[in-house]
Amino acid sequence: MDEKKLQKELQSKVSLKLMPLFERYRFDYSDLESVLKWKPIVLVIGNYSSGKSTLINELIGRNLQRTGQAPTDDSFTIITSYGEENGKEIVPGSTLVNDETLPFVHFKSFGEQFMAHFRLKKVNEPFLENMAIIDSPGMIDAVTEKDRGYDYLTVLGEFAKLADLVVLMFDPHKAGTISETYTTIRSTLPETSGEDRIVFVMSRIDECDNFSDLVRSYGTLCWNLSQMTGRKDIPRIFVTYAEGEAEPTGMLAAWSEERKLLKKRIFSAPEFRVYHILQDIDRQVNELQLICEAMHSFSNKGRKLLSKVGKFSLIAGLAAFFIVDVVSSSITGVPEEPLLAALVSGSASLQHLTLPLTSVALVCFLTWIFFTRWSFPRLVKDCRAHMADLVVLDTNYKKSLWDKVAGKVSELLSGAKVTELGGVHGRNLSKTRRFLDRDLQDYYDRIR
Image (tube, rainbow, N blue to C red; front, side):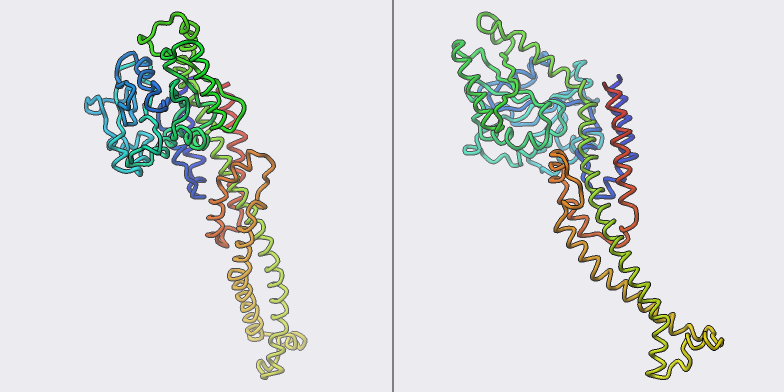
């Protein structure tokens, strides 16, 4: 399977079939658009002494990133073989966020301070032709943290959305006790990345004095993870040590194969790129489908209400057509001969239709005013008050999606117009269902 070709094909199909729907419902698809633009990404995060830069240096086979026990790099650094860029080896953040071909344009909103701590380093390594590794500033305790000048955790979440693999690293001495690590595991990652994309790593095990010390540190990390995730089942935790800084003998010999598996997992990230894109498309189209379903239900209610008002208008119009001129004639003497009398006498003419038709037009006008100024706004208010009744939430997955899009539905309802009572929402709902059942399923079948 040619992943690059399939990714371009997906990008084209999404642009053709989904972008008009996203725009129609004012749905933010910037995350999906960004993911479709570029190459596979591995994001490496952890506290400042967790061995992030050491692992990255080992992966690329050179000392590119500075390492140390204290904070040594306070920037988000993308490492890849990106273009020529005038021959420069380092591309500044201000250039990256203004390049429409890259998925970082929306990062401009984080301001100058962030851009000053964002850059790309070009490395001539074959595997980086189809892969980018992002090194990140070390996490620290919020209690002692100096102002970074930008929202670090939100930025981290945005990178996690783009990443095909997030490597979260710990060291034996700070096994998950950092405040920002807690927030990342508890909130940031669950909201921005799938569990299957997160790899937990305890590094620097060569610094453990003995096997008992290693077991203690590992157990502490497991306990902390259970508290942070709120789950009893602990994900797999890879353990590793720095190549060249420790010899794989004695206690470390047993973990040599573990290190190989970790590196294999990281290098295999590009293989899951298309699958992750399909996951993102699947989720966003399901969210869009819920929006379409809610608006379709609303338009159905509106059409039923309009039908009732229309029937009343028809009956009232017919009554006005035959009665108004009779009443007017008996009270004011105008017209001299009502339409019914003229029909009976056989003297009916166009002149006899003037008042009846005028009365019908007035009934229709008043009925329309009543519907648009009273009935329709009341319907909108009722639907906004009971939005969950507009959709079928028969699974926990749909309930979780509804929590994300309910605000958007409320926004769309507040700005709803009578002209939306046609079949547009129903047609759009059918389009999203066809995309999920046919197009998306076809791609899932192709990557199996």
